[in-house]
Image (cartoon, rainbow, N blue to C red; front, side, top):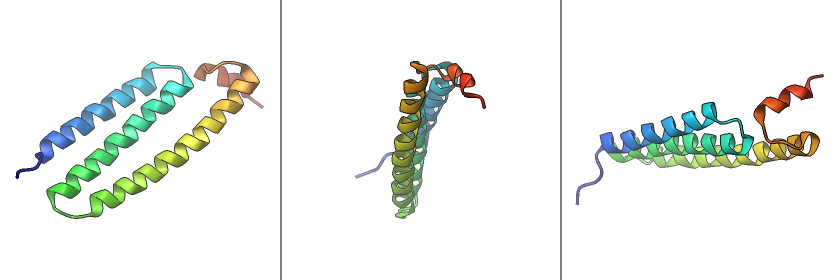
Length: 102
């Protein structure tokens, strides 16, 4: 049984990363930006999995576990910051964070 070619896995990873990058740059809603960063992290994990499968090494899966751990930590800290910002400013607009200066 043949597996998925490396080029197809990397192409999906690049498309996911590009979609996440567009989401971060185009939107000003903090929750949407956090979800876009998650998509970018999953794209990096997919690239690790595809590379590890290509060379039949478990390194890609180990790196994916690291990416999942980092994503979980990023979500917990990011949501805590977003909730604190929302309770203070009553908005989720990223440009409103300028009002938090010194």
